[in-house]
Amino acid sequence: MDTVLSGIRSTGNLHLGNYFGAVKNFLKMQEENNCYFFIADYHSLTTYPTPENLHNSVKSVLAEYLATGLDPEKSAIYVQSDVREITELYLLLNMNAYVGELERTTSFKDKVRTQPNNVNAGLLTYPVLMAADILIHRSNKVPVGKDQEQNLEMARKFAKRFNYMYKVDYFPEPQPYNFGENLVKVPGLDGSGKMGKTAGNGIYLIDEDKIIQKKVMRAVTDSGPTEINSPVSEPIKNLFTLMNLVSTADTLDFFKEKYANCEIRYGDLKKQLAEDIIKFVTPIRKNILEIQGDTEYLRKVAKQGAEKAIESASKTVKEVRKIIGFREF
Image 1 (spheres, rainbow, N blue to C red):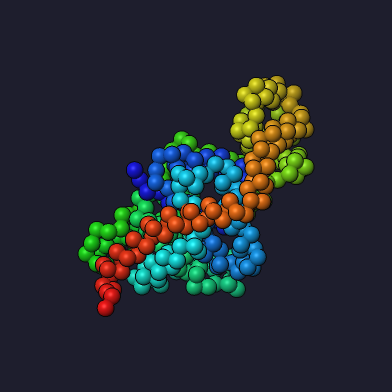
Image 2: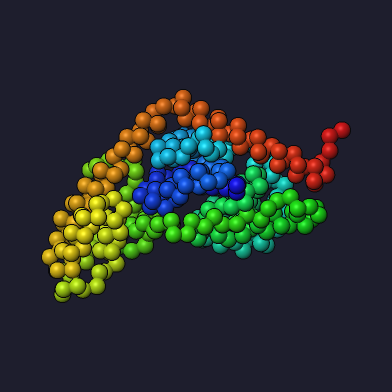
């Protein structure tokens, strides 16, 4: 059984893209692997969150992932900052990470460009902290998006470098977890690209009915088909893709036929899509709100997850310290 680790951003609510992409695959992962899911609150410090935002965001994210099906009895679900061993491994790995290679990472160069007034050491050593998150459990696999592939490559580099420097075969070189055909790309409402937080084109699982209706009715379309069986434009393909995820097959077929026959009315399409999204999202939203209000349950889950993670992490740090040469008198 593989040990799989996945980080969860501590800011931002889950949208439909997250749900049909990452979350549904997480649910499968936890059935087949030894999984660790952590909320990356240390990483968020690179953007100066307030104390109130930091805690509330962690609470919200934890509630949302639990509401969508992550099971604390099957996986370790924990808050990054609850596992202090991560910071020690981060320190130790930093001693063998070189400034030049960190400065060349795409993520660092992007942040220097987008937040020039806050180029902190945490941004520079972000790949090292990510490597510590992964290597602390000696993880074999990590599900990553395209934007994190280079950081996973850095984690492999640090694992290999540690093994070489200390003449051991201790850290595995983590590989990307491949979801294969199960990976769903959910489009946004702006006519192109995928649904995402920064693009502002998403429907969130916590959105109320009126907000969903408003977002869908404002979705980008085109001027309509001009001839029978004309090619479907990208914006309309996106709406059909969303409908395929939340509507019945008959509903999708009905509107595709209307488009093919040049009888499509985009207002009717959007109205139906909004209704189906609301029907899909409502039970999840209710579950999120219920869990958010149960502070005792959230505390129990976080504590249980931390205990599992600390058991694994403390073993790793103890063995790493011994390999490096630290000894007690």
